[in-house]
Amino acid sequence: MVRTGGRWKRTSPHGRHLASGPSVCCLDADGNHDYGRFARFTTDRVRLAYGDVDAERGKDTWDLRVFGRSGHLDLTPIRQDWLREVARAWAGAALVRVRSKSELQHRVQSVVVLSRVLASGPGGGADPAALGRADAERFLLRVRSTKASTGQPYSPRRAAGIVEDVAFVIREARDLGLLATLGPTFAFRRRDGGPEWPAMSRAKRCRLTSSPHSTPN
Image (cartoon, rainbow, N blue to C red; front, top):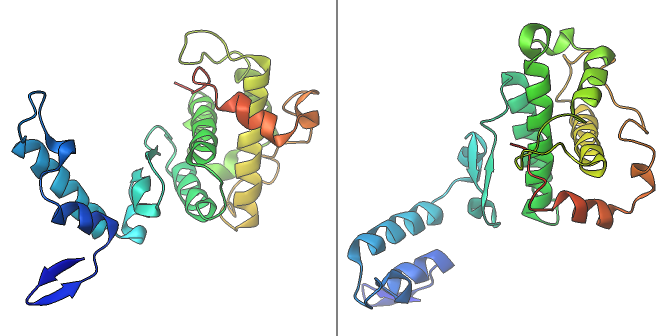
């Protein structure tokens, strides 16, 4: 709480940080107050305190702190406008259900892999109505040879995880009415990710897709 005009006023967590003044987090290496750093810290906390959830959803890079999480969600690598909007709407709906930010981030990163494959095909994947099962099968073939950020091909399990994530997002987006113009045969079947994947527990799949070496480039 802070005292203003002779009255005590309850503040948000971000407001309490502001009221405390330059704290330990804003000291330089010698233990002196770094006022430039404090100014940036204050600006960041003010922006968060007045952050608007709907406005944040409209951006291509989300500050997940606005939604009570940590980190960021980057939609900019998704090249097709329609697919980026689908990922944005799906992520907005999923925020209230996912258990961790990493689950949300990994699924969006898997959509980035789909975007790259579609971009390399006819029309660059710009027209969702023109996509069909042949495009889905091309994605299934390419994802097994796509290079990960380590410079090595994805492992069979990681490739299967990407397929599972994309299939999940496409299925949920259709259920939410977000893919009315997508070709009806652009869909994924139960065993498209590989024979071993459906038998794994969800917890094991999350561990595999949370590997620090499994993030798509």
